Length: 228
Image 1 (cartoon, rainbow, N blue to C red):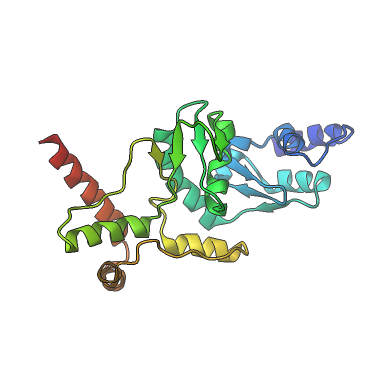
Image 2: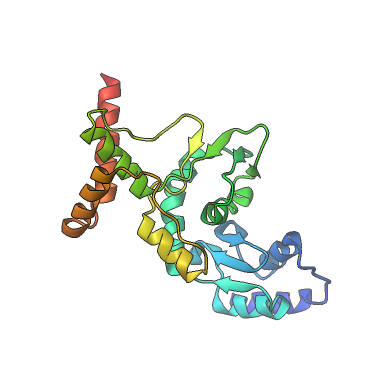
């Protein structure tokens, strides 16, 4: 199949492709890449899901002959982040939704960009919208739960109507590891509660996989309480 796509790509090189987003995505489709599973930026193409994108090494070579200035990023950690994120977004986003984006959040931009093709979503920064992106990360969700428990306020799960959470199951460690590899500034947790952070650090040492379990248990308890 790659050989056939290479032949079609060679023929297409006679066309005049610009460096516009429209033409780059068009060229990717011509060589057989499913652009619903890549994230576009003017400088780099990030593969979200290697198998579903069908972005083989041969197709990458063909693409780079046409666009040598655009790097193809095959970062396995980023692909894991995308897999975590998509489990939430696939359940929340409706076709043709207008989605309000946060300002200056590179990773959220990468994660949301493919949904303009997957679901025809429109990413907006002001005005009317159907859903708003909350960039809450896993560590903050967990620390919010711990803070609420320690202060006697309840579970403090963040889940608001009309919001979507692409990073809520992604840890700070994963996020910063990817950002560092990609040459971007690192981020910090928003929750600054000292007791919650201390307890999280203790659990990191004795049960490194605890964060997902804390959130799952909190969601279960919260749903049970709300159903009574």
